[in-house]
Every structure is written in C-alpha cells, then in structure tokens.
Image (tube, rainbow over the protein chains, first blue to last red):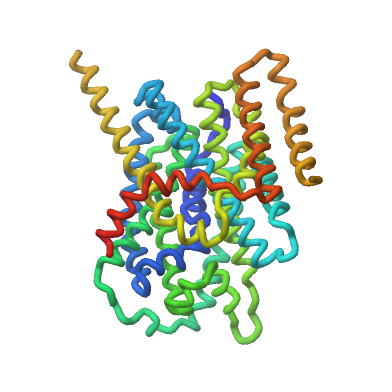
Length: 366
Length: 77
C-alpha cells in the first residue's frame, strides 16, 4: 500500500466539512441566486437533501472495496482497459478541480487584498504550501485541519451574527415569484456543486481508521456544512438583496466589509478571507493528493512522493491556462461543470455499483 | 525571457531532486512518469508565463456536455 498514514474518523469528518464548504463560501451566493433569485435559500435547503443522497451513494460505492481507493476500485471492477480510460477521466477531473481552486485563490487575493502582488507569486506561494503539506503527510493534513476548524467556525459565526442587525426581511419577497422551476434548478446546483465534488475524498477513505458509526458521522457533518452554506446565502440575501448578490463577484467578502457594530467593530473582512482560504486550502490539498495518488496507482509506481513536485509545476501552469478570465469560470463554465460533477459523482458510481453487483451474481452462478 | 528561464530552472531543480534516486534504482516506469509530468508542467508553465493564448482544456467539457446542458435548459426554463 502506498500510503502509510492513517486518519482518525474525527479528522476525516473535519476534512469533509472543510472541503464541502471549500471554495463555496465566496462564490456560492452569487451562483445560486442567479438561478433562483430571492428563493435561493429554499433551493439551498432543498439541495441539501439531494446532496445527502449523493453523499450516501458515494459512501456506499466506497464500501464495495473498503480497502481500495477509487482508482483501484475502478480498475478492479471495470477491468484493465475500460478502467484505465475511466481513471484517466477522473484524474483529469481532479487535476482541473485543483487548478480551478488555485486560480480562484489567486484571482481573489490579487483583486481584493494583495493588489500589487503579481498573480504568479500568489500561485507559487499557495502551491508551495500544498507541496509542504503533502510532504508532511496525510496525518499532518488531518491534524492541521482539526486545528483550523475552530478558527473557521468562529469566523463564520461572527460573520453571521454581526450581519443579522442589518437584515431586511422584505428582500426575500416576493416569495416564489417565478414558480417552482427555477427553485428546482437552484436545488440541483446546491446538491451537486458542494457535495458532488466530495468524490475526491473516496481517494482518502481507505486510509481512515474504521469505526462503527463513520457513515452516520459523515452524513451529520455534511448536513452541518450544508446548513452553514444555506445560512450564508440567507444572510447575503437578507442584507444585500438579490441584485447585489448576483452582481458581486465575491458577495460574502463584500458583506464582511459592511459589518459595523457601533462604529467600533468594522472592517473585519480579512478574517473572512482567512476563513475562505482555510476551507479552500483543505479542498485543494485533497484534490492535489488525489491526483498524485491516482497517477501513482494507475501507473503502478512504488512511491507517490516523487510526483509531488512535478504535479506542482503542472498545477502552476494550468492554474492560468484553465480559464481566460474570471467571468469564464464564475459564470460561463458553471452549468457545464455541474453536469460534469453529476457524471463523476452520480452516474459513474451508479454504473460502478451495477457492474459490481452483476459481476458478483455472475460469479456466484458459475 | 527571464521568467521562462526561471521556469526552466525550476523544472531542472525538480528533476535534479527527484530523478537521480529512481535512476539509481533502475525504476524506469517512475523515470518515465516523472519526465512526462515535468514536460507537461514545463509546457503549461511557459505558455502561461509568456501569456500565450490557447484554448482551455475545459472546452472539452463544454463540447461533451452541450447537448445535456441544452436538455436541462429546456426542462428548467
């Protein structure tokens, strides 16, 4: 087995929480409210149910071969040739997802905080941090995420409570203005976008120490993450109103700038940026891990650590090439990306499950 | 030009760190994977550094999912 480290159940659930929120905390409100407008919070809550179903399906598929990663399981179930093709598809997905996250971090930091720093330097720093984290090992990533979670939760809670005094309930009206269909489209987005991308965690799940209630714990944690996302979208609709939420590139960051308690507690938006960086970093590092691990397992290498630096250079280049501009990856690609997530998180695991069941039945008869 | 040289230097440093060990152990598969990834990484990085406009790989996703997306668009509009 390539990976020697083991995560505890708690570390794994923390990773699930952070990577479920991931990059969503900043871009989720504008994306979902451009679909279902002022009813976005209903979509988000409805999508939570769908998302938990998706997560349940993925956990079930991971149980087919409990000690194998996703890449190995696909190789076993689909056979060598078809398995390799499907695996290449997944590796492309992990790689693009990771470069997409690096790109988002770079664009956000250069446009909002480090205005005079070149974009490439921010990529470089972020990628070096990821390489360092992976060289420290999977266990260290788990432990550091345990340390980072309270900071994240504290900032998120401060953010939500400090904004409540400015909320205007009339922003949520008219209720169900365009009927149920846009709400359902938003719910599709909300169930597939944060939860579908958790498929990368199937590359980590074999290295978790098995405990009895792990499935239940994961579902509860994902429920918490989804509720937090719904709260954030609700606050952003209540305070900013629907048009400001749609037209801002980073509505949550803009919201954090509006926090003002008694002309004393104000301009705390950089703590919000820190929370966003924490969750995005956790997600990106898991994608990066999944990519290198997948390459090593697909080609049958004896050691995946030699791939960390080459993969980092690929990421550094692809972060820029992945999208020509901000609008492309925040607006234009989103519907296609949703279908891509749907394929990877629902369609292929379903086929995998059916093939596994057929194979077992077939073998039992002969 | 300087930036391109920097990228090439970075690639050379990585090759210098990772390659000698696997060469010595005659693990040719490892050598091949590392060299391929370094070549891909060097070409991506240089293309991005000199700001050369190429299509993103995500165009593939757009082409594949165009029909599906139109179908969903009809359902949800």
